[in-house]
Amino acid sequence: MIKELVLKSLSLEGIKKKTVNINICFLDDIKIKKLNQRFLAKNIPTDVIAFNLSSNKKTILADIAISTETALRNAKIFKTSPFYEIYLYIIHGLLHILGYDDKTERQKKIIQKKAEYILDKLKLYSKAYGNP
Image (cartoon, rainbow, N blue to C red; front, side, top):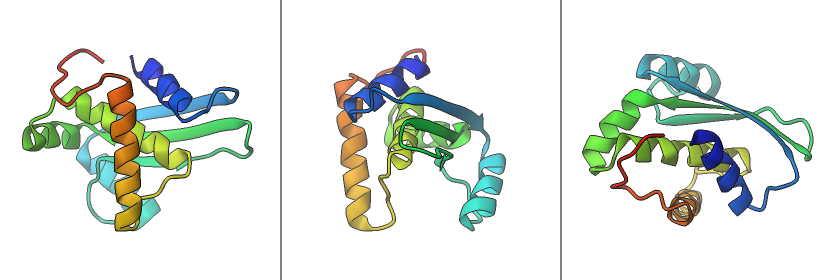
């Protein structure tokens, strides 16, 4: 399901003729906090961190780190499923890899709307309980 999610999300973004190699790592809050501190100078856990390692326009080479603890916690807070949260984080990470940012409020709105659009097109709704 995750591979299909990634490929369909990339296709919706017009990415079809590229070599794609994306590693997705599922971590706890302690490990993602260490990554966040080391690479982004933020001493807090986060939901997702994406690393674009691509060296040319024909290839997507990237790592996405996801906190499963944050997904579980946010699923309770937002009354969604943990799978929905993980799918959202994967798509959010992909969008970062494709060049979207979320440093300003305007950028946050754009990336959030884009993620919601992809989730809607893939029929992955917030109440969708199912297996990944």
